[in-house]
Image 1 (cartoon, rainbow over the protein chains, first blue to last red):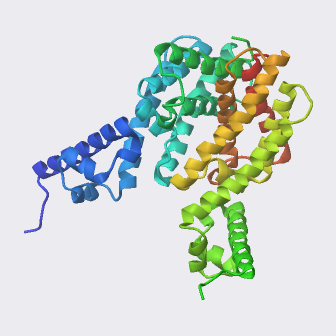
Image 2 (spheres, chains in turn red, purple):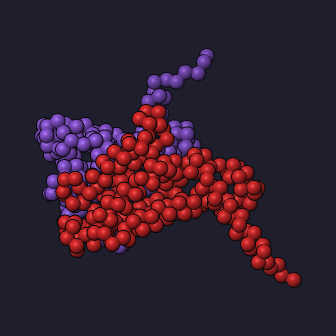
Image 3 (cartoon, chains in turn yellow, purple):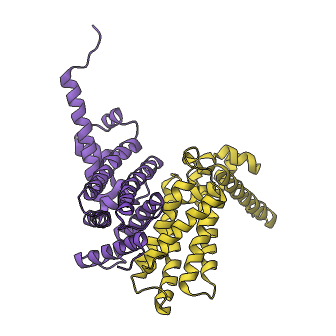
Length: 210
Length: 210
């Protein structure tokens, strides 16, 4: 009789895979990809390290999967913030602000998603997701040009400027290596930081002093 | 008699090291880090692959060294453009324009320096050099605030916005994978692209429509 995977086995496998992903996510959120060692993940997930490699070809593939899941969550949040009925410039400002605020509230994960040096496989994903953000911004910029609240411009290029400006300006504040050299991240400091970033972005888009 | 390295041997070693670096640089400039295989570099440099590992602990260390040399050249160019006697906003605009134009003239190398997914060691260098650019821009922004040609702002944060905006907006146009999907890189297209990027950056800084 040929071997056949029963429904129960399939389910058990899917659950183990999900647990491995969840535990990796937890590790990254606490200490970045650097701290997410396979032995540690296996321990947390209650599986043998070999089991992880039955689900993922390599540590890098597991990381890329966790990166995709975590980043897609942020992309969805941006899409959500852009989907209201406000004017396009207001929607853009809200989406950018929310992105920065969420990053500063979960700085370790945000640092890992935005800038932590990891592995070419994760870097490839980073490039793809930056395009996903840019594409959302581009649509809103086009709306704004049509509505007349944003001056005519190359929406595609401006959207990449937005993505770059907001991501790069968060790298320093989020960086774990700067923890000792910068003022403590208070809510006030973070508010001022977010205001500064948003001002630059919106001025860049509109050419109007904020 | 203890072994002593003669002057001539030292010189020969230094020359071999330099040749390895030069040949790696050549490979990267033609096809990115991805194409710079150790066997190929060894062939070009006329040394055995083992010789490369006597000079560099790993391929990644060699890449990081080439990255540093190539990026430092660009940082120096930005510093030079910022060192004229113009007003700060004019100097900033010139420096940003020159950075973008140089990148578009040497797109493969620029892509490799700005965005090619390589290795955590190169990514670490990327983060450091982005700070180097930001630090140059920050000084110029401070000058501009003092001169009155740039409105008062957090110069440190704005400098990172500039670095992010210009780097990210070049990623797409420089990307080798986009070669088939984008219009041919003509001088006219590049001029328009640079104008768009510079406009966003300078509007972001000054809040004045360009």
